[in-house]
Amino acid sequence: MSEPDGTRTDDDAAFDPIAFLEAAVPIASNESVEAMRGFLIETLDAHGVDAHVDEAGNTISSKTGANAGSDPETHLVFNTHIDTVSPHVPYEIQQVDGQLVRISGRGSCDAKGPLAAILAAFFAVDPDDDARVTLAVTPDEEALSTGAAALDFDADLYVVGEPTGLDVCTAAKGRFQGTLTLSGTAAHAAEPDSGVNAVTGLEGALAAVRTFDDGREAHPQLGRATLTPTTVTGGEATNQVPAACELVLDRRSVPPETAGGFRSELDAAVREAVPEPVGVDFALTDRPTPVLEAFSTDVDHELVRTLAAAAERAGGSGDIRPFTAATEASYFAPAPVVVFGPGVLADEQGAVAHAEREYVDVADVRQAATALTDATRQLVGSASTD
Image 1 (cartoon, helix red, strand yellow):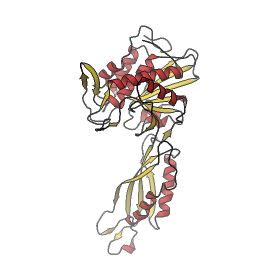
Image 2: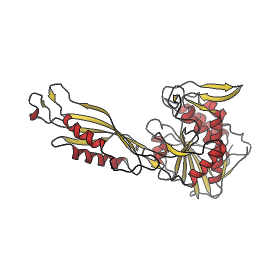
Image 3: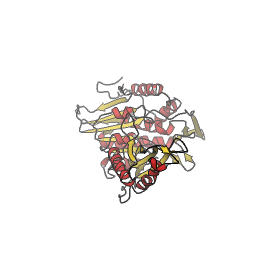
Image 4: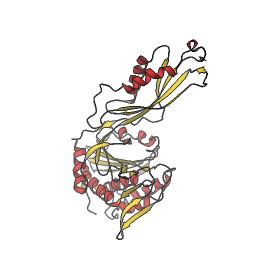
């Protein structure tokens, strides 16, 4: 049962993040999140917290201080996702001397391990009278992020659960993809001057790509942006002057660049480098939701320092660094946002997340839960001791 404000009652059983994870990892959520979302809602209800699913499929629950009303002085949002990549990888456990030490399976670290740690803090915190803490779990981070795109909290602080090895990640590069189309006029290859060869425009286009970032300063946390040609196609027949050539480009951006600004700048740079009469058009790959832009939070912000210190007390390194993958954290910027959680994207043996050997260590999940509870208590309220 829950109180009218959605908070937990005293008789709720203590939440065990490892028990949650043992139940959650076997639930396949690669093709559909229905079963996993149902289990999440059941877990919230069992611990006395009301939740609802919005039209975009997000699972949302809030705990609000007595005097916070609709405009709390401090609003902290926990975000992560329940979808996983295909195919599903079966659940396995590893024990040492009869003790559970590792949980393996698709989603164990990306991102059900982080979800378990977040839930521990969410259940434990009792917000101050003027504060609110919200849980927002999205359904399709691994695909189009339609859930995250629909969230609109205008909160003060955001913690996004992803496998960071308990490091506090304050920035990430954005990822844009687009197609550069060079256009000409088809003609017989025996009379090449009677047409316009689109492929010949590649020489200037590639030169513009190579020099596009010359003179740009590196970002203090993320380093330099990258621009990489990935695929190229052109021509329809071996005896014909090609009328079109397409070059796909991968952009990993750093602040303050935006997708729109990048498109305009690149289009102009290539137009200047490609001689007439070859036509130039650059278009970003169409998608129904905003692209995952680059973001950066001040490393000296209270959110960053509080969580880093709590992580170190819990047994982590306390390191502050960029995150190496794109996340839904970019949708919450420019508000202060960090990425944090147990597990790693890769270890010394290779890929972990999105891989057949995906796992999370039990000790890391417990340490992340302790760190998040500690930090949340300092940021928005006190934590219970159950």
